[in-house]
Image (cartoon, rainbow, N blue to C red; front, side, top):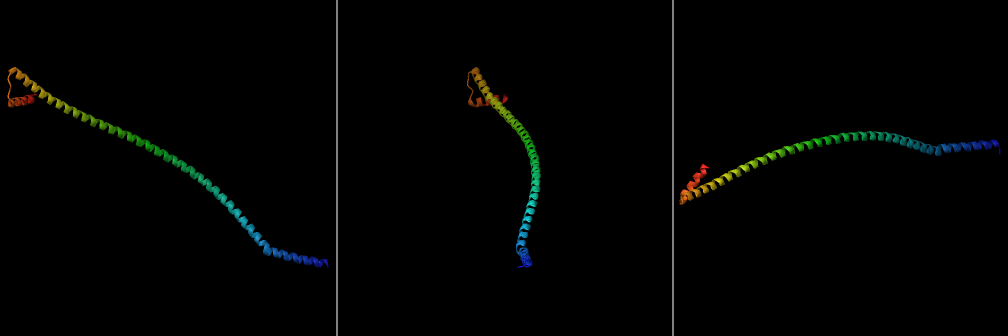
Length: 156
């Protein structure tokens, strides 16, 4: 065996091995590396998007909290205003009710006064007749008695 032949045989075998590796081994490895590279790039891009979205969400949350505080203060102000209105309406209603009760009480007092006067007129008329009857010591007939009572009532 000649060293040149061995070297040529080994060179041909190495060339076949390189060709075999380039044809069958290297493409799947390159493809796997490219896929992995793409996944890593996508993951980094997604992380950047997530970070950006997190910042946006934090800003939106801050804005939403600010808006909520403003709305809450407006609602509280409206509630205070409505409470004041209700109190004023209640005062007006109570005043009106008090006036109505006072008017009704005055009307009732007036009616009671009128009834008391009528009763007093009747009692005075009876007393006058009784007194007159004692003075005269005689009895007046019923019709004359009724006429006399009515006349005295009308005069009082």
